[in-house]
Image 1: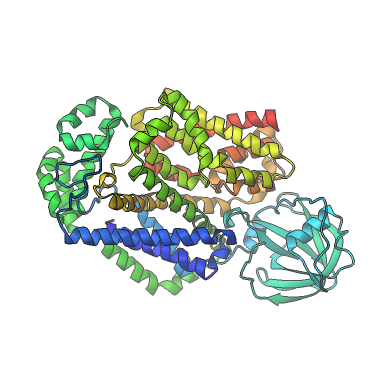
Image 2: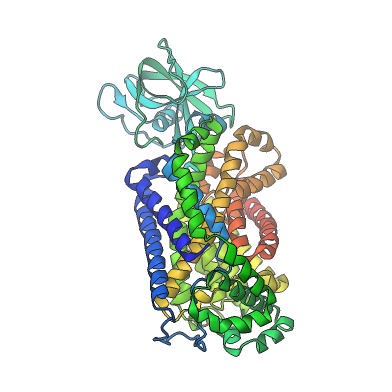
Length: 253
Length: 387
């Protein structure tokens, strides 16, 4: 692989990272907090590509490389193989593989993790807070799945009872075949994504297909189940009504 | 690493011949260099400056001439790349349809996300290592680190505190340190310690295990001990010839700017390529291994430690995130989860792949298993005492 090819690949890689970051597609893969780092990394990749092309074209134009500044400790005898044209030796052939993320990001753009991943991994570890602040105002009160689950499990639903709640997530088939409401919790990237699942009870049957996003209006239920994968407690919510929604830009909890 | 890069070039072939039999490291370097320069002609025929060097080198390395003629018939890589890209754009819709199954889709998502997550750390690590390789004078390291190798090892390990980031960045940095004359044992201690004991990772560990600050303390201390032990072990048993740093004439470029960008380009392509291999492996494990399997391994204390050590190697999670994953493995003992946190940043598929690329296969295939054993033993020991 010569330097120009490498430059093109770096350009594509940096460009695809920048594109995914600017269009918010990157939220399917990593946390929003990585945005500035991704932008800087993308710009650096593009800069490395541009500088490589520039030096390459310039050294092609002024053939015998100029030995102007001999500040460097390595004073060669001028045969120039310190900076000959194309050091193809050990030019990493493995670098070809960097086309794969470019293809994946630009052409395939895989979706956010969904019900397959949710069924694969054990539910995320809930942390118990000592006190739960009152729910936000509004009827129904919007609440995150993770927040709901930890209030339901550790607080016995004390801060939840008496309120109508609004939860959103995607549908994933539960161990008994009944649909559950789920969201993937990321700590860093999708590779460490863990599901938070909330069981659905009540008279309104949610019959949306797996992976479709729904918004549920319901109330606290004291039913508790077990996640078959890692035996953690699973909270339930009593569904009053539900509707399908479009996938949010930030699909993870 | 005793021979400065310039000597062999300056003195022609004579000293190199002696090096072949004398200092093994230098011999390896010389081999790389001779082979390297030979093949540099393949693609560099259009460059007039190389011609002066050609006869001398070709005489010394007959195979160089052969590879040169072979190269002449080869289609340039730029043309191949252009062809591949055109094909991809044409085949875009069938390609998208290929990735439709839930399993394959999850694989692609995890693969991309590991790479997107690692990309900034890789790029920053590469830039920092290029700064070390090009702008920081050799004399600095001689002054900064204790001259006795046995003391330089713990010093370099503790210096890992200052590198905020995950393990992807530390591999090229360690390579640069060795290149700049830092004793390999110290550079390796730094390589192992930096991703595990920096403030970001330890803070993440404190947050992930609320009410159990001893987890973060145990992690930091155990990781540092493993790093120092591995450094000393390298001093005692390591053979310099196991480390094969590829010859990099571009680093000795007269123009520092050119050398800097050449180093960036090389490391991004190199370490990045191996990162892709590691990400693919990690994504495969992530999709193939169901979480339910782990459940059955958690009950036995010894098995659970080994299981999580293996899981840490296979999953290749970034060291800034692994504490949260460890926290969610609630069915496992704290000791086994500590081992998970100690092993993860030091040995995993992605790291083995990158180390193979940067230091050579002979190094990686010895160093990684040894580190794994040390990390399990020391991690389990600290877990038994502190947790």
